[in-house]
Every structure is written in structure tokens, then in C-alpha cells.
Image 1 (cartoon, rainbow, N blue to C red):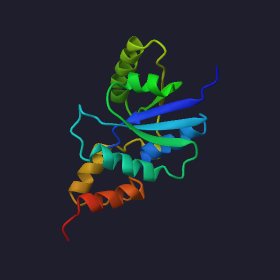
Image 2 (cartoon, rainbow, N blue to C red; image 1 turned 60 degrees about the vertical axis):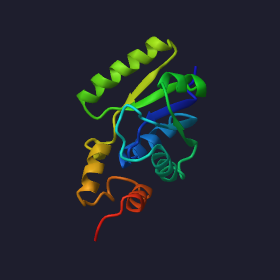
Image 3 (cartoon, one colour; image 1 turned 180 degrees about the horizontal axis):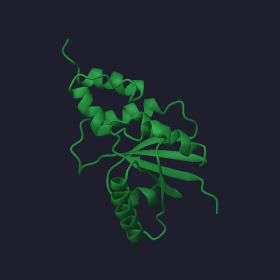
Image 4 (spheres, rainbow, N blue to C red; image 1 turned 30 degrees about the horizontal axis):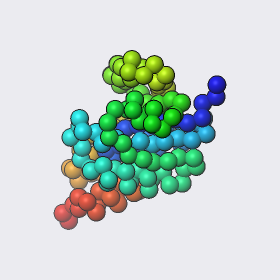
Length: 163
């Protein structure tokens, strides 16, 4: 069986250069990649679902075979609905692994055909986390090297800084 379609879910609050790196690498392995921006009702998101989807879609517009969608609900339901072969999750540290392993096993319990593939980010993005980006932005720091340009433009539009 060959793997044709990968689903890369996340809240992407906001999408970072690390996320983009993973998408580009995934797109070389799979025929198609679906980046699924989760409503994330269990998280207190900084950006709305529409804003997160807008900047993710714009950031990924030049990536071949990549589609950006939104979803609300269980990941396992999105997996079934989209008829994907595998879910991709990024791992930066041991703490990520413990959490992601529990989620992957629970999803497999809910749907035995559910498969998760874990990928490490490129070394240059191992430290990068959306929470850090938000904190740096809120405190007036430069985030240009951490996120794609559509994120910078979106944040400046939605949350302008005082000059």
C-alpha cells in the first residue's frame, strides 16, 4: 500500500516557519497534503479560526499539492471524512513525544485504521513554538524570521502596535 494523502493538523496560532518547513518536507513524500487548521476550542487561541486559516493558506499558496482547510471536532472524524492515509505530527522535544503518543494511541483506539507519523523539525526550527512567537509579538519584538510574511502582515493588521 502506498501512502497518498497526509493530514497535518494543528491550531497553527499562528503558523510558523517550522510548520512551513514540515509541510514542504511532507509534500515531497506524499501525493497530497491537507493542512487542517483546528478550531482548537480546548485552547485559548490568539487568532480566530478564520484568521489562522487565512494566513496559513496564504503562507502555503506556493506549495504544490497542499490544501489548507479548517475543522472543528475530533481529529479521528476528520481523518475518516477526508479519507487520508496518515496524520503527520511534529516533535521538537521529549515532552512533545509523550503528549503526541497518548493522542495517537487514543485516536487509534477510536478508529483502528488511524495512523500517525512523527517528524522532527529541521534543526533551525527545533526551538520554534507558536506560543513564543505570540509572546515576542505582544512585547514588541521582531518575528519576521520566525513566521512567514502573511503572518507578520496579518498580525500588524489585526493587532497594530503603537508607534
